[in-house]
Structures are given as C-alpha cells and as structure tokens.
Length: 177
Image 1 (tube, helix red, strand yellow):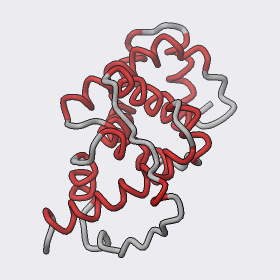
Image 2: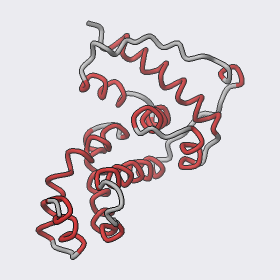
Image 3: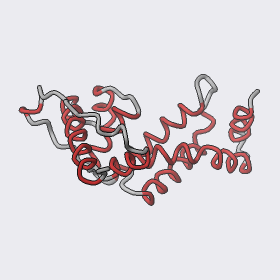
C-alpha cells in the first residue's frame, strides 16, 4: 500500500490529521485547476476551499479504481463550474457566420511563461475562460461541455473560437516581448 493510499484510507476513516495532510499535499494541484477557472486569486481560493469541503464529504466514494489525482481533478473542475454557475456566467449563442469559421490562430504563446499564459487566461470573460479550460486544458469534448453547462454544442464551439481570438488579442496587447 502506497503512501497516498494509506493517507486516503485514513481520510475515509474521518481522521482530521490525515485530511489536513491531504490538503497540504494536494491543495497546490487543486488550486492550479481552480485558478484557471476563476477571475482572480481570491475567487480561486474560495473555490479551493469549497472543493476540499466536498472532498472531505465524499472521500469515502473514492474506490481506488483510478488515480486519486484524476478523481480530485474532476472534483475541482466540477466545483469550479458550480461556482461559475452561481455567478451566472453567460455564454453567448453561436452566430451563424461563425459556424464554419476555421481557427487559424498563430502560435504566439511559445515564448510565454506558464504564469503569463495563466494571467492572460484569467482576463478572459467567464464563458470564454470556462469553455477554453474545459476543452483545451481538461480535454472535454464539445458534447460533454454542452451537457455539463446546459448549452448547445454549437455554443461551445463558438465560445471556444471566440475565446481563442480573445486570448490572442490579450497576448498581442499585454504580453509583447
């Protein structure tokens, strides 16, 4: 039994000390996920706290059938999406002219640091940032995004296209080298 498994099993037995250790060990990982969806660091911290409350409440549901990090990542993404729903983020509907548009984004991020890229992503409107993170970072498909956010697949595609265009403009304007 590995160290993580022992720690998780102790958490499943409701050990407060084990949960504090779990939080210390995995909060940077979860915070990084929350930060991608949040408008700022304070909001990411709020999402992080809410996420770990859910983890504490639902830790016994983890069955060691996959990686704990994957389970934790799903919890963090879902909690981030719940937080955004409460804020009533809006997703603009697809413009008919956008439906066949091709994404011809230049590779302008190759010289950026990860920090610069996160800063640029955080400047995007909620809807753009959410779709961008779910598709590009988390690997969700448009049908999955549509289902999770209660939007159409075409809206997801449109938001992703607009998010990429918006991100390119932010990078061009704010991160010139």
